[in-house]
Amino acid sequence: MIDEKYIFTGATKVKLFALMAVGAVLLLLGIWVTSSGSGNGHDGHGEKKEVASKEVKPEGGKEVKAEVKGAAEETHKPVWMLRLLKNLWHNNVFFTGISIIGVFFVAFNYVAWAGWSAALKRVPEAFGYFLPIAAILMIVVFAIAGHDLFHWTHETLYQKYLPDGKTPNPEYDEIIAGKAGFLNPTFFWIRLVGYFFLWILIWFMIRTFSLKEDIEGGVKWHDKSVIWSAGFLFVFAVTSSTSAWDWVMSVDTHFFSTMFGWYVFASWFVTGLSVVTLFVVYLKDAGYLKVINENHVHDLGKFVFAFSIFWTYIWFAQFLLIYYANIPEESIYWVERLQNPIYTPIFFMNLILNFLFPFLILMTRDAKRQTMILKVVCFVVIFGHWSDFYIMLTPGTLKGEGGFGFTTLLVELGMTMIYAGIFIFTVLWGLTRANLVPKNHPMLQESLHHHVY
Image 1 (cartoon, rainbow, N blue to C red):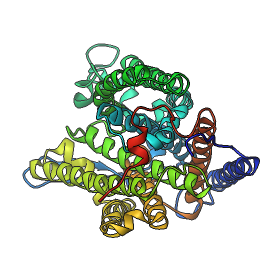
Image 2 (image 1 turned 180 degrees about the vertical axis):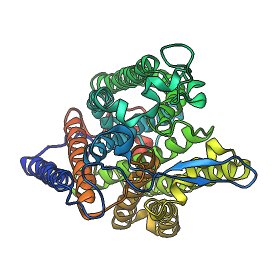
Image 3 (image 1 turned 180 degrees about the horizontal axis):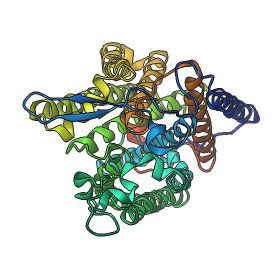
C-alpha cells in the first residue's frame, strides 16, 4: 500500500493538452473579436471615452478622483492588448501563489512535527515543480508589460520639474515620488528575482531531502527538512507580504494597506488548500493513495473551512479599518470597486463564493468527509479566489474597460484554461518522480493510523 508510483497515462496527457488547446482557441477567438471592435459593449481599439473621471468626497476627507476612464486612453494601447497583458499577470500571480502554498503546506507541517499529513505530503510537495515555470513567466511578462500594468514605472511621475529645471512637471505625483525608494524598477527586479531564487532553492532542498529519505531511511533527512522548513517559514513570512505589495497592491499605486499582505496570503492559502484537496481526491478516485482515509480528507476539509473564515476575517478587518479611517489614498481602492457598476457585482459575489458557500456547506462533520461535496466546494473556492484576484488587479489596470462580456469572457476563460493545464500537467509530472507515499518518513505510522474523533 505504501509502495506505489503515479502513472501519468497518455489518456490523462491528452485530456490536459485538449484543455490547453481549447483554452488557446477561446483565447485567440476572444482576441480576434475584441481586436476587430466587435466585442459586446467594449471598445476594441481604445478610442477616447466620454467618461473620464468621477469626483468623490468621502465624509470628512479630501476629494478623491476615482479613475473610470478607459485604460487605453492612458497607455495608448488597444484595450484587447491591455486585457491580454492583465490576464497574463493575473494568472501568473494566481498560480504562483498556489504553487508556493504547496511548499508552505509541507514546511509548516514539518516544523509543527505534524504526523497526520505525512502520507499525503508528496502532493503539495510536487507543486514546487511549477515554481521555475512561474519565475520565467513572471519575469517575461513584467519585462514586456510592466510599463503598461504598473503606473509607477513611468519616469515622469518622479520628476518635479521639466528638463529646463524651472517649469513644474504636470505629471509629477508627490505620493508616488514618495515611494520611489521602494517602488523603482531596479529594486523591483531585485526583489522579483530574489523571491523565486529563495523559494525554488528551499523547495529544491526540501524535495531533495525527501527523496533521499525514501532511499536511506532514518531521521537524518527528516531533521534537515525541519531546519530548512523553518528557514522557509521565516523567508515566506516576509516575502509573502512584499510580493503581494509588488505584484498586486502596487497596481493601484496610491493605495496602501498594512493588512494587504495578509489578505493576499489568505486568498493564496485557501486556494492552495483547495487545490491540494482536489489532487488528493483525484488520486484516491484513480486508485492511488490507498493509505489515505476519510479522516485525512476530513482534516483537509477542515482546513478549507477554517481558512475561508480566516480570509473573511481579513477582508472585513481591512475594509472596516479603511472605512473608519477614511483616508483618501486608502478609500479610493473601495470607491473604484463599489461605485463602478462594472466591478460592484463581482466585488459582492466574492463574499458569497469565498465565505457564505464554503461556510454553510462545510459546517457539518459529514460534509467534510464526502469527496463529492469537497470537490464542489473546492472548485467554487478556487473560482471565487480567482475572481478575488481579478477584482484586486483589474480596476487598476483596465480602469473602466474591465467588465465582462461574452467576447471578453473568452479571453479570461481561455487564458485561465491554458495556465490550469500547464499547472496540472507539471504537478502530475512531478508526482511521477517519486513514490506517492514517503515510505521512510519517521511519522508515517502515525499518518497511517490517523483518526479524527
